[in-house]
Amino acid sequence: MSYNFPSYLKYADTHEYVKEENGLLKIGVSEFAIDQLGDIVFVELVEKGSNLKKGETFGTIESVKAVEEVYLPFSGEVISVNEDVIDNPEILQNDPIGDGWLVIIKPESNFSLDQLMKSDEYKSKVVPN
Image (cartoon, rainbow, N blue to C red; front, side, top):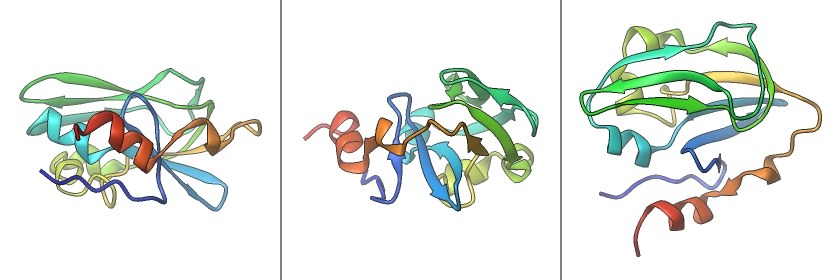
């Protein structure tokens, strides 16, 4: 399978992607990780307004194979939660980078996207040559 690793995204070791939009950070899960999970049946996310620290979970994704937690790659406040994905988990499976985003975070001021992997670095870690 050929995965899409857009260069405008940054990635965490735990397979979350981050996209900066107007100072806010949109977070989702990489196509690779979604493919590994298989058919997604349930998504649970934190409440809007939650303040989370780097490394804390902001939700769970349940598939027919496993239940996986999703982790915040930096500290910040949850500004928005994608209710559509909660109501229709197949959105996450069909379009993880587009409509399948999970949360939007207002990061703490000391955060830098440079703390995360570039797309080619992430790809080399998850896709064998």
